Length: 219
Image 1 (cartoon, rainbow, N blue to C red):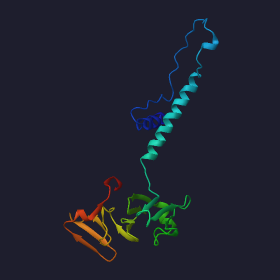
Image 2: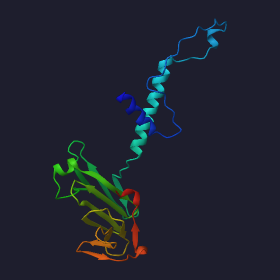
Image 3: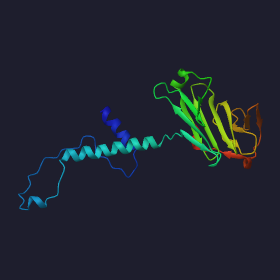
Image 4: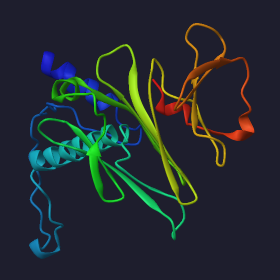
């Protein structure tokens, strides 16, 4: 019975337009077929009954696995800037140790210099956002604070901002403003501004000066 329940729960997650057969179809008693006088060459080819069933079940399982994979997107590479002055930031993860490394314009560096392999083993990617001039990455390694960084391309200059906050950023400053990120303040209803030198709280933010980040990539 436990197996039947697990199979049924998976099928319910599929789109409505996919109809899957039951795990164990009922087998009604066979009826004797009347003798046919039609020529065998004109009869359509038919699969055995249970062959058709397993083919349909395999198609449903494939659709389910594809839907689950599409629900967990991950941006591993980001091209920033225009064609003449472009920069590339690529995130790589070791399949065994799960350690993250960055390749920035062909140079390999640690994604986070203060994390060890044990932190990566239990960590998970919270957000990864890429746009024309912006790459934002957020990582959760079990601490109350999320670690992350922002890469921003302004003309020929590529800048990075590191942060450790309880929530992912909601916006990043536009060029040519100094690079800073905006976070929700968990203690008040204000905003928290984080730049390379200090952190400050503000009651309002000037949204035209900011790139807003998608809310669906925040926990």
